[in-house]
Length: 165
View 1 (cartoon, one colour):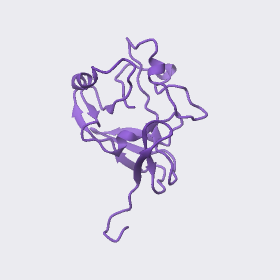
View 2 (cartoon, one colour; view 1 turned 30 degrees about the horizontal axis):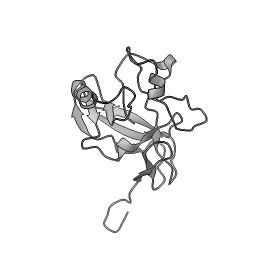
View 3 (cartoon, one colour; view 1 turned 30 degrees about the vertical axis):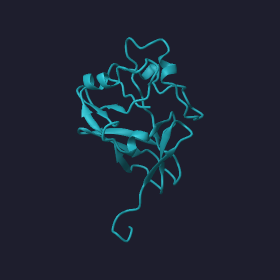
View 4 (cartoon, helix red, strand yellow; view 1 turned 90 degrees about the vertical axis):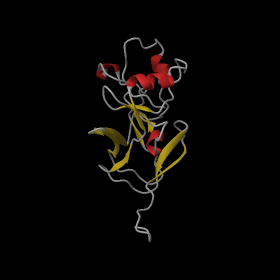
């Protein structure tokens, strides 16, 4: 604890080698720790589509996270540091929906200076363009990188897509 009774900061946002900005641990984060809530404005799927409809089909950069069949969180409006957590095919975090909230948890101990990442598992949809894997290409650099942020074909299931980039 600091002299003012608050805990020292846990995270910082800075330039990432993976993509744009990323979130980095300032101190050790133990496995199982709830790190941060994915915050932002709650909107309908229709409103989320409207907000991003003017973008080109190859633009995968959004701060949208599907909560359920009726709600999307747009972290571009009222979001926090969680919107900058990048994708990895070999993640150290996972996103968990609890009630009507999305939290990021550590799935292993994360050391100070390490970038936080989780597997976006973007859902494949009917009508995806033929180059959808390129649109959602991955640059995590993990030895097990599958080359895309999309859920692997063998795990693909019908449902909503989480888009973030």
